[in-house]
Amino acid sequence: MSTVKVDTIKTTGNVEVYTCKAWVNFDGTQTAASMIRASGNVNSITDNGTGDYTVNFTTALVDANYQISMSSVGFSNTNNSIHAYVKGSASTSTAPFLKSTSQLRVVYGNDGGASTLYDCAEMNVAVFR
Image 1 (cartoon, rainbow, N blue to C red):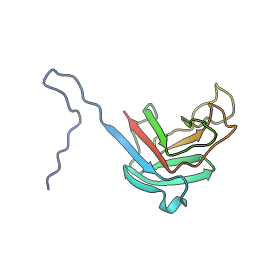
Image 2 (spheres, rainbow, N blue to C red):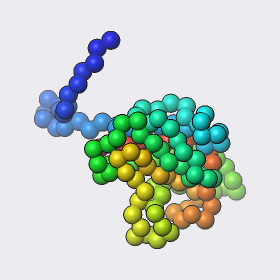
Image 3 (cartoon, rainbow, N blue to C red):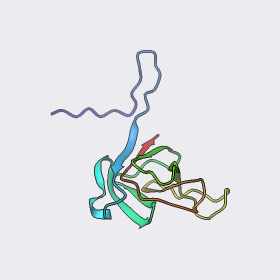
């Protein structure tokens, strides 16, 4: 097997191609040691309590100015939908998000606040930069 290493990938039209820098599919109903089903550049998940997780990167990112995509499936509780969002350092809308070059804290709940969080059977996080 060969490995290709480049600093930048561009299309024939000279448009830069941005790649996923880290991703994980995990089961929040399991213990932290056995949560991860599959991942790339994620070495562990820290369980901070119900619906509250820290995704730990294997290799640090260049900075914390990355984009996050999150989802969850397999949860049903009185027709509530689950929202995935980056955890803030305080319960205010102006609090800085808890993300760094080495980890990202995410929560899964039924609204944008911290009122009700849930452990879901399938949760997904992808990081792009």
